[in-house]
Image (tube, rainbow, N blue to C red; front, side, top):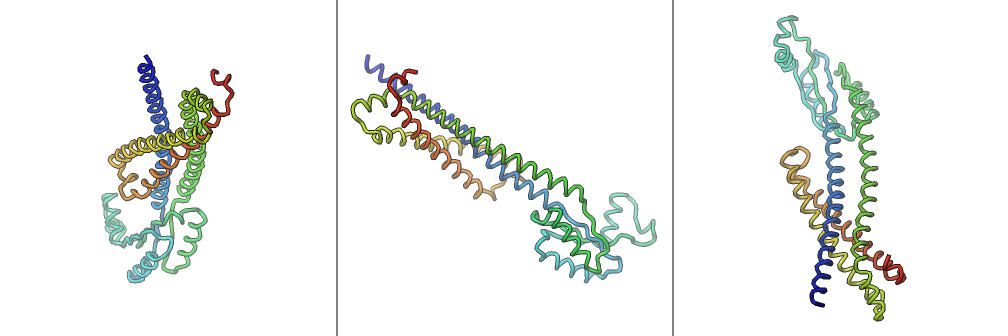
Length: 292
């Protein structure tokens, strides 16, 4: 009879351990996924911003050697990510390709100016930086005009600010919920062993002696939960690299390893903390309250 009771008790404890570990792993998976989304969001922001640029139109009489020299100076400037020179002939061919008619045949000459398209680094795509760059470029006598879509720049910057603030707020709420869920899960796990804790106190065991096995088990539980969460995150990243290769790619493996390490640290730390608090509470609890 006692053997059956022992088997039943062990089965319940094992089931409780597995359930709480899986619950914690799901929470850790959500935290890791949130970190990946935040990082990917910053990559998308950088990608979009670096597609913002100037079209710099030169005077038609400007010599090509002067334009190429100017392009080289742009290439080494701190704000330019890339530049592309479009000659008058190339511009005419592009217009003919899009309109189906030769501009030179219609007008008798090529009215299209030589152009340099500049793609900016993401740090220089805010309105103030754009104005300074525009003013700096216009001081060059070979430049006739500069165009870029100011409304689009404002919309992009404002929207990404809103998205960043929203992600920060969501992150704070999710982390808070995650802490509460982990604490509740571990507290329920310890609650099922409250009578064991009371029995150990009655036979004279010290509080540190009682806490030690629970804390070790909590750390192991956090580690297992982290491993499961990392496996789930790895599967998610693999799918992301397959379907969204531009956003998720193997070149960011160092960042993903840091996220895995943070997830593991989070799982172990909060499992240890929650276990310590839960055991301490049941050690101090009065006998009558154990039955509630």
